Image (tube, rainbow, N blue to C red; front, top):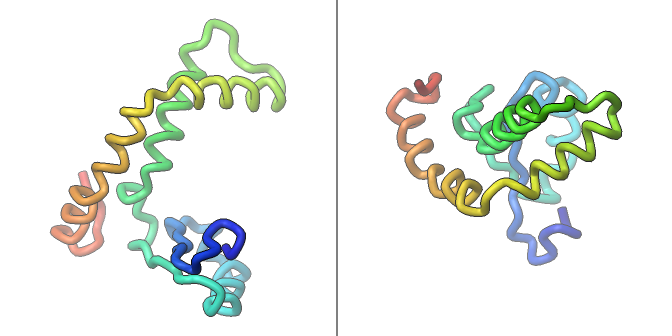
Length: 114
């Protein structure tokens, strides 16, 4: 965290997916809690994680290709190519959606959002 945010203003965030909430991960976060601020997401709330939207866009782009990747290295190459093709406006729209997503989550008191 100190490398990424040398000013000490960075926040660690994760979506409380099952692997992120494991005993090992939880213990590590507790042991290192003084090293960074930890933004607490509602449990398993994909609606708040724009990475899920980006993964979905990449998945659809890979599925639309005429020739599917056959090896892990092919997949990595295809994902990098498709990532570079994502329009900056799409990414900006996802970022700008966060206030609406947060408000919707508050309305349902942390429950799932349609």
